Amino acid sequence: MNCGLNDHDASLPDVHGGQALTIKKAVTSGVISLALTGCGTVSTVLQDDADAAQALRRQKTYCQSIPRVYSGLAYDFCVLNAPPDPTGIFVPVILLDLALSGTLDTVVLPYTLYRQGTDGNIRIYWRPARG
Image (tube, rainbow, N blue to C red; front, side, top):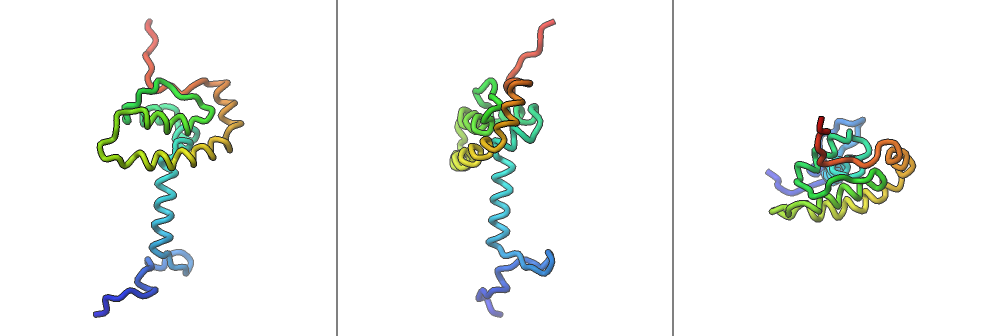
């Protein structure tokens, strides 16, 4: 039995049009998809407001609302403005996401300016109207 690695050992099964997907490519695509699912801009611009607010409430953020303009950055700051994570895993991820969110927020700026004018801030904690 040969335990040494060769070019064929570092590849996953050949399933996409004859191209072998290497472990490096699989890890890279996994990291990118994980970053996009946790990206503040994706959470606030592409998801429903209630979903973004619920995610921040789960983090127990102290933010009451976030503006729609540069909402990805505001979302990340609100995640940082929550009780500390005992594992400490989230801080480096959030710091990386700040750069990604800043870039994506700039790309979607015309849309978020329109939404800010029509819908206002995304409210995280709100009280039902008394009546």
